[in-house]
Amino acid sequence: MAEKHRAGVEIMSDSKSARAAGDEQLLSQSGVSALLRGALLRLLESRPEDPVGFLAEHFAHLSSEAEDGASERQSVSRALWHLSLAHHSHRSAFNNNVRVAYELLTQGVPRRLSAGGVRGRLYSEMLRCLCSEGGLSGSTAAPLLRRVQSHDYESVPFELFRQGVLTCAVFADYIRKSQCLYAAVASAPDRPAERTLCHAVLSTLRDALETADGIDVARYLEASAKISPAKVAQAMAEVQPRAQRHDGPTMDAQEFEDAAAALFIARVRTVT
Image 1 (cartoon, rainbow, N blue to C red):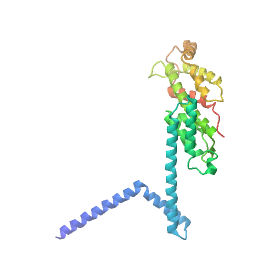
Image 2: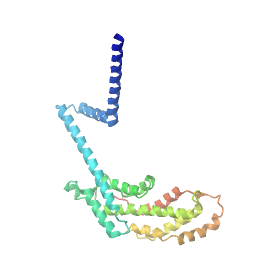
Image 3: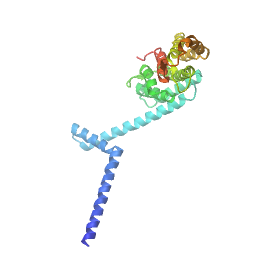
Image 4: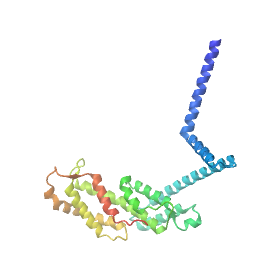
């Protein structure tokens, strides 16, 4: 009898330990432990006269911030959807969609702030998402974003907003164009292209960009389109005698893309 009682106590003890471990894991994984720890640290730092009221206000503030963050993410998602409805080459429709996206991102902003434009934080986040959805890698988009994004505390007026959106959309197309140029230069998909040929094509691309009207960023894409396929063939023919040897220096696709991107980005005005 005593042994059965002892066995029952051990089973209950194991069950309680397992439940306690499960509870601890739940609190840790859900972030509740860190949330409570942070609240208690703030309480000890402030030492308010009404500790319960202080904690209630603290959690209410955290809840409000979470709701604001969710609302902003939803606004950015809706703005991106509208921007995807028309290609930038369809300028009238594209501009209308940019206006809708702009108005979506100013909803819920106090009137004294919305009059100045979209919050810089939302604008920059939307540009990052726009580049990502355009197929740009983070490393390729980063130098451009540093030029066109705003500080979190700034307000972005419509014309600056439109220009930033257009720049990112055109840049994504431009990079895809540069990838096609590299494919035209490479002798085989699994072999890097000859460096001399790549430099010849990049030089031709640079010349084309320099003839573009810098007022409209879309002109850069139009200029790059003019260099293929005849221009590429001409540039390759001019250097082909020097590139007959296939054991010379090569350039991989990423290096070519970075070089082509730098030509474009150098012509984009920095937001100040």
